[in-house]
Every structure is written in structure tokens, then in C-alpha cells.
Length: 348
Image (cartoon, rainbow, N blue to C red; front, side, top):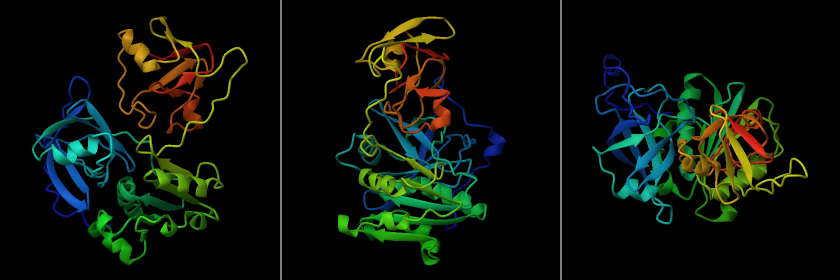
């Protein structure tokens, strides 16, 4: 990837780590906004006093808390070795839920926003011998951080980056050296399905030691998921950045004949022994809030992992998009999960 350019790195080490609010969030200043492509801008956040930010790894995202009680998740796209800034790229979506419009139209350089420390549900698998990165549109953002890390480690990788046209292609200058050496291949489809990158052909034959990573809008995610279904378990990694892009929830399987999944159940708070009813029309998070138990949430759709909670007994009905099989044996995302058992004991 191209050099970092003029980042203006402050002497953060001498000033210590960035301070957090009582809620555990960071208060960061928007230092710069740069045009990256048509309708796409990059936003650079720094500590107002030049202090170090919490570290992150490639594939991580942050929650940006915006005016109007809006909270949105954005992947970090800068080099993870940088401790003085977080950079995200945002596509302005007029028909979206309002987060991108707020950032593009109302947030100005110098504004201070609350931001949660980075979390990673889309990490590079260090076991892989080769990395195949598939990005659709703004889904390229986590791939940029991955490329920084992969290049630094001398790893073998190729990026396939699908956009409508050259004007819609973000980070063209940064990706330029990789495009020249064909380590990054940009595919334009002009918005026509028949011109889409043939992901089925690209992923037809799984290669030993190769791992696939994909991120992008709904249609791209569906195509990538279908094309990679036959790849070996554990070699395919993905991240959905919206509910619209995520696959429809399938019909849950009942754990026993005495209890239908998704129906009323109870939760027990392990620290106090308190038992609460969770009716069909309320989430676990809502029931906890009504009982005066606050749990931080963000997406409330099982996409970000903010509300990940350990459970000690019972059988959850997982409805999220990020926990793998091993994690599901220990954790549950209480913004969306139900229970197959009558009682679910939470480590709260």
C-alpha cells in the first residue's frame, strides 16, 4: 500500500493514553475530512490533547455516537500501528438510516464526538498461508487495514475490489501501487448485474492454506456467501455492516418439545439471583433496562458485538451474525438472542 503521507503524528507517548468518559467512551476530535470518491469521505479522529488511542487490529471497527442519539459502526481503515488516530471512510447514503448523512452534512472539522474503543469481529486469521480479500464498494475499508498488516508481515494476499465505476472507487491513490502490481484488482460493473465479478468462478476451487475475507453491500454479500459455501470450515471470514446486507434469519430449531424457540422465557442474573420474564415482544436488553440493569448496546441487530454477554446455564437461541460456534458455547448477544430453554442464566 502507498505510504502513509503527512499524518502529523503527535508525540503521544509523552502525554499518556486518551481519557475516557464515565461511560467508557473516548471523546475524540474530528481532525480532517478528505474526499475519497464520489459520495465517500474519510474522517480522521484524534485525541484533543494528542494522547495515544487504544490499540486496534486489522478488521476492527469503532462505534461513532452522533447527534440525535444515533450510533453507527464504521471499520477502521488506517494502519493499526498508528496510535494517534482512527480513520473511517463513510459512503453518504441518502436512503439510509441517517448516520452517513449526519456525518457528511452536519459534522465539521473540530467537532468532538464520543467514540467507543475498537472491537474486532473480522480479524485476520494468522493460520492462513494466503489471503483473498473481496470488497464491494465501501466494504473495502476493513481491507485497507488488513493490507497494511499483511504487507508488514510479508504475507501473500490479493484484493478484488468491486465498484460501479472509477469515480466511485475510494482510496485509488493509496491502492495505486498494488493495482500496478496486480495485488489489487479493481472491477467495475457500471451497476449492471451481468457485469458483476464472477465470484463463483473465482472461488470455485478452494486452495489449500487460502482464507477468504469478504465485506460489502447486500447483493455482494449474498453472492460471496453463495460462492464460498463449499470452502472448508474456518477458511471463510466476513462482516456485515448493515441489517439489510445480513442474511434473513432462518427458522430456529427447537431444543425440546416442551418449549418453542423464540417464545417467552426467563433470564436469571447470576450475581443477584434475580429472575426476569422475557416476553415474545421484548428483547433481553429491554427487559434488563426495565429492571434497572444497564448493558451497553449499539447496533441492536447482532452485528457489532457490543452487548456480548457470557451465559452460565441454559441454551440460547443465537440470532446474531458474528459469533462462531466456539463463541456460541460461552457467549450470547443479548440485543437479539432468545432462548431454547426455559431459563437462561447470564453472567451479570
